[in-house]
Length: 479
Ligand SMILES: C[S@@+](CC[C@H](N)C(=O)[O-])C[C@H]1O[C@@H](n2cnc3c(N)ncnc32)[C@H](O)[C@@H]1O
Image (cartoon, rainbow, N blue to C red; front, side):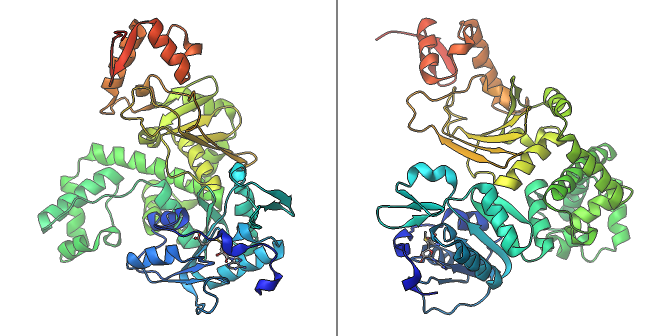
């Protein structure tokens, strides 16, 4: 490939970066990029990501046909292909570039591209399957589903959307399943221990939470050192003696549902053989089901239930968390893991198909059709009536996605009755409940059709002669 073949000014598309790009940051957060792994940034532009990764003590190299054409191109554990595909005008070359990047990846390829909903940020004329800007740069904006299908088609492996416009393709299926498990299953915390006694307490606590004793291979290294001298049967006896059976039973019920959720997500994304599941999930299947096929059958039924409108609506109505409206269930990020399992599955399937954005506050699950939106209210905790900043939605039937920013809107939608989105036991819920009660008593919710946006709400506050001081409603004193 040479420069002469290119008709657009690709070098102008590369920007200078001060910190990590969104896709590289995502890969770090998802533990795909770690100090133990080498990284190649293929099409690295001005090399901002390579510099930032090296500052993090990560072995990183870059290559770019314009900026670093003479650098050596060696395979790496992680290959980044960041916003490269969309600047290539020629579909055949897009495919070749992706195939080349894939051939250089030993563990995972992280592909990112600009998405169709950024169209209003790219001005220019239609050219081939994209836009040619006045600076003679080209942008093919991808649909979320198109990007995933394209990467799957070229790599021939099942891919996962890590975030909007960021797709992971794993070289080994175990790594994909480990990634899914980390996404879906609750993070395992161990109490810190400094001696054998506290290490045993930590194992007991873990047993109660998970519903089964852990295997040595699942424990942090420091704990293995503290417990390594005990015989397995002695450790089991100590656990049996100290663990509260009711808590263990409750832990087992939770873990059974979590395992079903994971297996259903796995079916949605592509099921592997039992041996390719992460060790902890294999142990959960053995502990909580009569066999892997029984677990899979139940998980398959769960996934099927997602198609059943009446079942999904029933689960929303029965949900102990979230607010059900005539169209959807709205749940706060802190409460989503407490939704019924079928609804957790609903949200996870959307996230894996289209990518869940990094910043979001409420998940909105529609009960007619299958669509999930992640809504961002940056001031949810401090603003008594938080204003909507952005919304990212995916339709699960078509995999079409859309994004709306409300930051420049003069009349943003806002929230009321914040406690309804949270767990009843959330520490902030009582404060929000008190405010709602005061607002109801003041007549502020008498005209619900008016209060959904800033202007209407402000007018109602005026009409009722009230204003807000923090989460307190006070009488209005006109200046
Ligand atoms: C939008 S820039 C992105 C640069 C960098 N990855 C980043 O995110 O900062 C696109 C880059 O793709 C490079 N590029 C264009 N065609 C390429 C190809 N066929 N193979 C590899 N890189 C290519 C360009 O030289 C340019 O630096």
